[in-house]
Length: 333
Image (cartoon, rainbow, N blue to C red; front, side, top):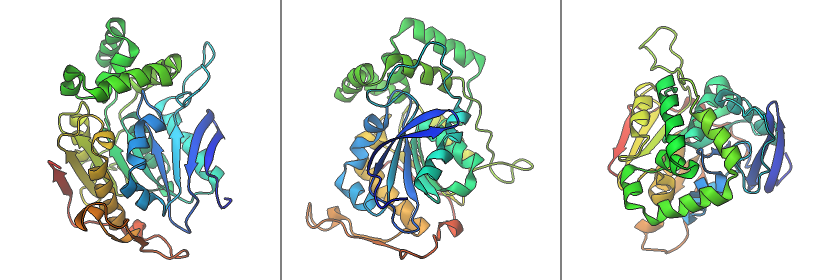
């Protein structure tokens, strides 16, 4: 991979082009940070608030960051032609090795939200050797049955597509109060994301199958995520039950569960500072950050955060042997 691929790229995959945005350049043997957004959003709407945060930039400047937009969801995307078959959730996952190989990444740390979290989890199940760790926000491991499908169809008849998507993204309290954030996202979902393309992605997400994961030891030949995982959900978020269930199906020795109070449905937007702090500890647990000075503990803005990698440019990653003695749960942040 060249020293810097900074910018936008369209990557050929077995199921069509993927729009990808690269920030930074590869740093030795460290993994790339690869993000995948939720349905109704794109990488900008989903992750800009988090990745523009100064403390997050102090972390990510030591990694190359790869933002993936689901097909047709990026800003300015052309509308798919009549009859276009949107990739299934599993096919979306199998598009990602093309991105990894194109840029020469050896492995990635994935950060996904909602539908994007599902895609990254599926990616890690199919291609475990390419994934060092996962941060999964608002993930629902359950498939959609015909009753769910019918309810979604009925909702589509009585609500506009943006409002239907908003009920997936935000808590009931946020929707009832019609917060400024909800109003802003309603406007942006309506104007920034191509509505026909969004409808295809929404339909496919609501046709997904179970992730088919089980905690090791609970069933014979249990299949689960082999890498370290941090699960994140806001208190009373629409995805809360799904994330709790996902937590029950993962290996407790390699899983961190973060339930964030007062964060609503999009913790990466409403509580980016707390999420960044949790991500920092997650990376430290994997051996990629030895020391990170917190500006808030050193007196306000103060000097910028200093980050020192635990690895030299040529050391092998130590994340493969990552273990925590017991499941860590952070509630009420």
